Amino acid sequence: MTNKLYYNGKWQDPLHQDTIAVENPATREIIAHVPAASEEEVNLAIEHAARALPDWRATPVEKRIELMEKFVTILESRQEKLAEIITSELGTPVRLALNMHVRGYLQNIRNDMKIAKTYPWVDEYDGYKVYKESVGVVACLTPWNYPMGQVILKIVPALLAGNVVLLKPSQKTPLVAYEITKAIDEAGFPAGVFSLLPGRGAEVGNVLATHPLVNLVTFTGSTKGGTEVAKLAQDDVKRVVLELGGKSPSVILEGADLELALKRTLDKVFLNTGQTCSAFSRLLVPKSMKEEIEKLACEKIKNYSVGDPLDKDVRIGPLNGTAQKEKVLKYMNIAKEEGARLLCGGEYEELEGYYFPPTIFTDVDNLSRLAQEEIFGPILCITEYDGIDEAIRLANETVYGLSGAVFGPEKEAFHVASNIRAGVLVVNDGKQTTAGPFGGMKHSGYGREGGIYGFEPFVELKVIYGE
Image 1: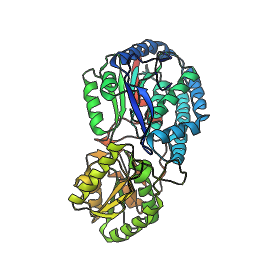
Image 2: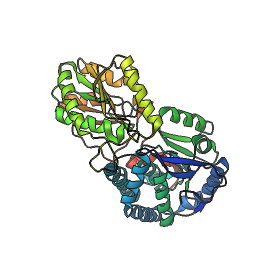
Image 3: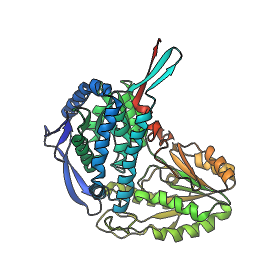
Image 4: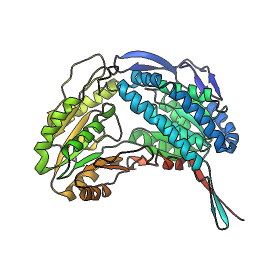
């Protein structure tokens, strides 16, 4: 089915011959071609979605949950296949693909179904009621780095809340979106309620962001891309949700458990080959502990093996394409020009795929490009500070505000965390859960995904006065 589009409840033959090649970043082989939806096809899908909206909005939430149960059951029966597809198009190690990209986000669906059952769709007050209704036609623009998870975080609460959905997956990693669409189709969702529109940003995303029948655009990707989408959507006063970039700090305080702090920091910055918006890519350390932390970090980096993502012992796969690898190499040169010191890593062999090893720089100026710009690769930069006030200042000295971590004595750690301007903070061994809200401040976007807060962008409030 990867040679078709999906709208109006059917797999549709493309009206044009334009296609997009999908590359396996581990082998550089072309593994599929998917159609590039045209403006004409996007308009058709939007019109069908708008016609389906009234009936879907009026469908009892119990029925929507019933269809979602069928959908998630189908996906659960295909976990291994989903993981294999994600590994082939993204390059993430297969064990990570199965445990995080697939199983982790299947749990999100189950959680959202529980929320929908008890969600306060109507709040009753003295003399009036507040109704929470679906926003309407929702366009979901998803990134390549979490090709299943970001789709799930958007389409599931949107559908459960009674919206109709048009999905444009990243042109780099569209294949798992096809499997998700197959499950939607097999589950029996009504025609027009869900559409799959692979394609290029200018030919699909821009049409979705400007079409008068689209009521909400939810976008995950770069800050530059999100800004462009928001500008397009604002002329029609659309609701917009943006989950954008990050340059998140991990702050180690005096008295911290260094084993815990470094494990959690390195796990996060090297996760998904560093291609995660919430990566802890800046490590802020006390001046008095800097040498000790540097030594321990270089010992621990040896645990992050790089290689074939089909090898279950590998922790870091390839970067997702030549552009991403060239970007990482560019920042290696920038780091040297700016006077940062290469602490460990950085050396690699020209292998078949787009591989790059985990790398740590130290003596990094907090205002340097290395510390300020999102790289999206397995690079950590270490900056020293002198005193808690300076640690907080350095943590906040960025245009981003997505996530962060603080390690140290509990009282001081919570004080620092409460003063960092970011949407998601972890203190010591705190466990991040899918039930909590995920999203950022400042240039990291606005709106939240996950848990009950993930429903809020997809509902409108209507108050009716009267007994």
